[in-house]
Length: 132
Image (cartoon, rainbow, N blue to C red):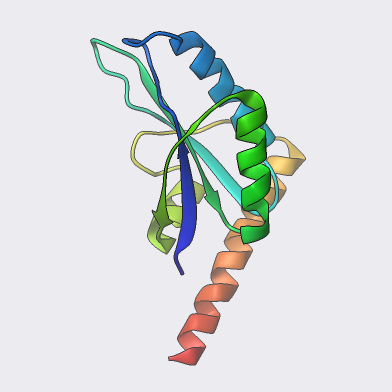
């Protein structure tokens, strides 16, 4: 199963508006904690600069519009769109994706979103195996 992923403009301390972009990342990450979306953040910082990325995997195609609308309201531009493989999604769900920032969000919404994402992936994998 291949799903769409939306990556937003990175926040890099070497460029203007770094703090504003970082604030927008945090706000959008919070708003994207919804069923059908799997947002995640990455920390690519080095000794010379700080760099953070925000992306969301669209698990439910009907939620893509919501994600884009929230980004527009916050003022965080889309950088690129691509696809996310099952393996990548599983790594994000486990908090093991490259440079992933693991948020200790214990809210019921965040737990429900992750649980539904895992269940959806498992059922689609079973369907794929059955059709082979």
